[in-house]
Image 1 (cartoon, one colour):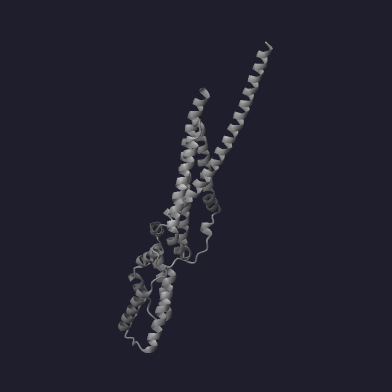
Image 2 (cartoon, rainbow, N blue to C red; image 1 turned 90 degrees about the vertical axis):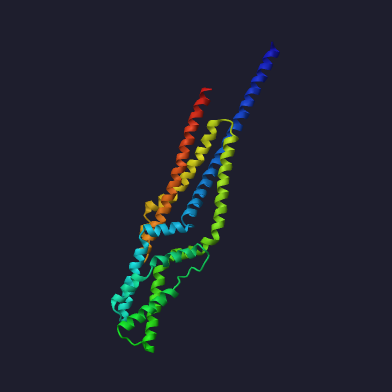
Length: 301
């Protein structure tokens, strides 16, 4: 009788020890999976940033589409014509000369060639040779119409006028903030592709580990949901701060064409970040629904 009681006490002690050991092991697994969820949220945030950069800053089509949607070409043409008119008026020409010349020049082609240079590893300087030749021919034609003799002194004045006009042309066609990052675009494109692919692979590996190494299905989806929510919140911080503080419209840029392009360019990038946030939140909701479904089955088992 006494021996049976001793055996029963030993069995209870062993069960208690096993339960305590299982509980410690379960807590340790929870900590590991929570850390993996945090790492997943970080990788998702970086992956979202890389994807957005690929389709915006590193995309020539994105830049040109923003120029079209913001009316950039027509604004540049108007500003070029206005500044040319002031130069022509100060140089003694009739104002109609500047109007006719500005209207005949294909500003869109010049801007597109300038943008093309940033994405093809070519020189990022604005080409002025064709501009100067066309302007010189226009001045000669104007001189013939007005019976102006092109003496050496007049020729020197014409060359000075052409150089001044070329400087105006370069300032209107070039984009200051784009010139700063342009030299890095071509070299960094392949690196960005490698980083983006590596991040995508890391996301896949983390999700597979959390899914296939967890015994309980509801916990699989719970930790994946944590990672998705964390990634969405991290991605939403920057655009929310920038748009809420109204920093972009307060940027001081000299010409209206560049200001309008700048605001549209970066505002759309931040809206794209919100699209990534929305995608992650939708996936998080789906994961939560799956978690709730399997959790009910787990509780009822």
